[in-house]
Image (spheres, helix red, strand yellow):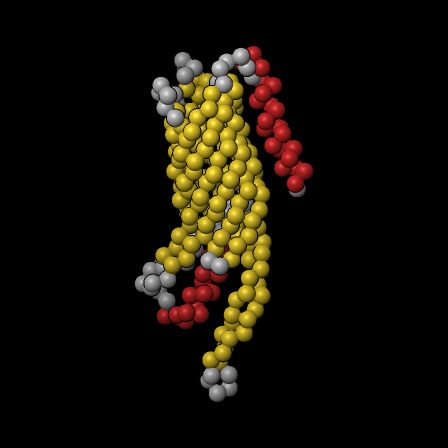
Length: 223
């Protein structure tokens, strides 16, 4: 799998460079950017953990619409190097926050990620050539955290979007797909009553799949 990711990264870097050789004499430029986005995912094991934890706390008295995670909010900063107008090489850092507030209780859960990554976009100009569509992808290192459970993984991203150029301002709209899955273990407590109705707990080691794979819709501004 690591060899596949390495090949994937080299392919992303080499292919646009070979296609844009005639424009390599253009003046290279650096740009700083930031963005905000909304992600859509379904971490099934995390949702099952929430259901189980609520049943321990509230039994059958819990009333809620649902206990499942579907969305997260993602903020990002990036540094882009453009050797030509057709090619963008991007170093970025993202923070994803997936909160879950439980109706009719004070319970709150959150599934987060911190993700540094490198991306390569190939631009396809349209109209007057000032604006462009882009396609690309890259690799991210994901540090995943749910409650007291942590794990990490490396995963690819593919993306497509549109670039607008208004003077020095470069707003972007982008849709992407991330694969970010890591399996780990944690200690959970099962609760029981004995013959005399004394309440006690037993620690149990369980596996959980921290799955942050999903679609991200992102708005960015480069300056």
